[in-house]
Image 1 (tube, rainbow, N blue to C red):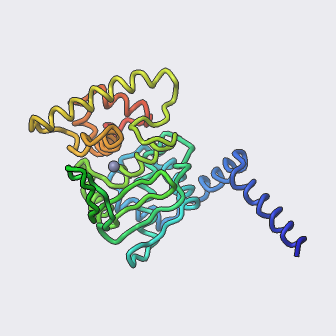
Image 2: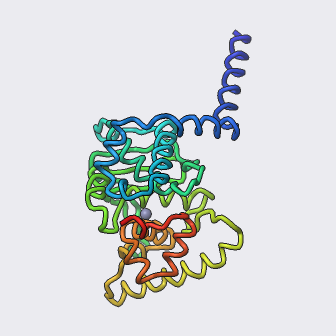
Image 3: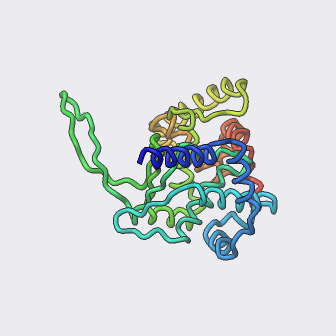
Length: 274
Ligand SMILES: [Zn+2]
């Protein structure tokens, strides 16, 4: 009995070592990336990601590789009676992996599971209503990203957003941008930047742009970005990401400094995808 436990422990340690050893992880991912991209997956991405055919051949190849790694590493869980199909997984992976197109090799490291509900789902939320009263209520959600390793999506919203690519709203881009923001353990609108010297400019530009959005919303001025971005700096980064990928021309024209920061961070230039 004691020997069996020792053997199981050794096997467990070997498997853990293989899974987390950076050199082995890199080798496994390279193997996955260089596998032929299944024709069915290609057809799914072509039919559901409007900008797929606008990407350069090199970007398309990178996206295909990222999708293969993503689908091999992340677990999908159907909730509320939903059976998560291959098509659903490929569509969610394709949109999420757009954020990694710049050869970011991290693949949302904290994220393990993606919970998919058929449509909006209800969660319990506590809210302070004044006079020292805390009220518990049930609110409808379209998606959310948790720091503990899970992300939740409404399939109905994912579908709606892929069909309406240019409206500046995309729940997958939004929630996965939160994942990037939360990579350092904090959700405060500051993802891990390339160089230490990048943080000062990021803070200056983002603070100014966030303040401007808040002021514009208060004054009833029409904005390129969705008003939800004025909720807090973390939501501002997630909404700015949605706008950067879906309405790049408008963002570049009205907010060139913000566009430039996102362009440097994502190392992509979506205005080229026309
Ligand atoms: Zn959010």
